[in-house]
Image 1: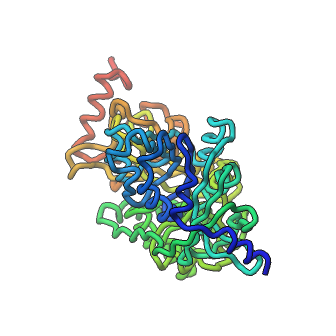
Image 2: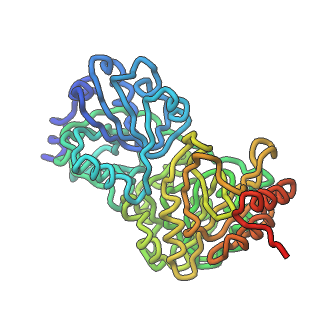
Image 3: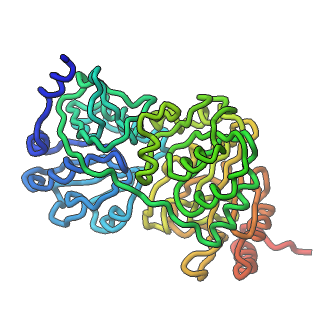
Length: 438
């Protein structure tokens, strides 16, 4: 078949593929579980003969030498939309820098900054079907945009990737070269929720009604929510990230997408990250569709879902209602991701709600996460004018439309009892909420 012959003609080795990188090139790569392991690993063998190579990455899942080794300074620089533990460790060495973004514009804004230019794209894909199409599988956030913009397009074929539908397909004729690297897809095991996370999950579940469409993140709190909504009916999913807990909801009959007002009958996502159970569920499953982040995370697209419930987590919330989910003071921890996108979109939805959930304390109860002011230098992920509902293990605070004084009182009620007086006293001392004088 001509298309398969075309595939064979474009096959090169990993070493040949990385040899095509030139000094001063910029390389965009697939994110998270869709990162091209072979290409990123193999480049380390020749990186030292190259200078000023810039990467565009997002949530790297492995500690690649090109990003972690100090001797890569001057050779490799990483521009990152969402930090992983490796990036947090490397940041003080000056070889990685965070790119502020809302996920729905992450790729388009980065390309805007380079006038639409990208030298190289490295991504991952399934083997081609009989018509010569490959599936970009579990990563569509920026991948398709970067693929289309790049001068040189190289895909790393991995037979372990699930075949997914939606906007995932590219034809072999659109690709310059392919390499093969059939490694296991990176897995992120489901976190077992703690007692506190279960309490938070119970409060969130109270706000999820039959027929709602939901967006959940990953971690103990989203997993706790899953257990509390097993009695709901006709839920739908429109999400940035498809995770294992969603498979449980489908298998239990809780999610059937029957009452969705956008893409009825379909789970919609932008990328997937979880365990083999999730990847097996996605493979050739026509009830799941993956789209670019600039579509799934467009607040006005999200708003088309009836009763859209967005659930995200945070590191700190102050009494103005400002949410920080991306940094600890000046130290970059992760990124904005799609939090503001989904939080805004849910509130634009009929019957929708944007929820931010967090434990009331951190560091073994020694500090409060509900604070008078965010830590100096902290990044604001959700501005005060966008905030909706905040939940801790102590309850629900509905902040939308409230004055700062009333927000403070609502947040104090869900703060840890050990810090409630301190929050109020500091608010008075700083003049954020002056003490009433008779």
